[in-house]
Image: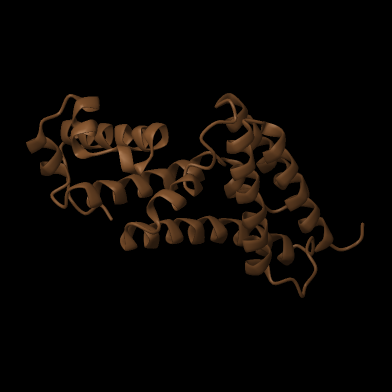
Length: 204
């Protein structure tokens, strides 16, 4: 987690390094990205990189995970904060499809795409990825709980389990979208997730 306080210029430089690292990881994969690659991409010195990331490459990769968690959640706003009706879930679906259509169905999930690259290499990165998914699940579960409170969801529904199932389905859609470069694969997954949600709603 970020605990240092930076000047505005320092914070901007640090963010630029993290952004470049995230882009290089996507383009080349973790085995092909080192500190020198990131330094060259950002026109920073070795000393600057280690000033902002004294823990070296591992600390930088962990910062990338935190950045990508924020990005994954931001991609779903504002609907993610407003989930409480069927219509709000449709807006959430449309928001994700709009964002990833604009990206050309490339890159997959900002957070999920890091899992295969980092989870086995760095235990702390794996912990941060897991925390990011748990945070995402909590957003979905809160929306489901609001629906339950307003009687738009069956009273015996386990909202956390349902949120986990929805996220699992959507992550599968991201993987297939990334492989096929087809937004339809994500749309199909989102539609399936919404059918799972509909099955937990009381009859109209």
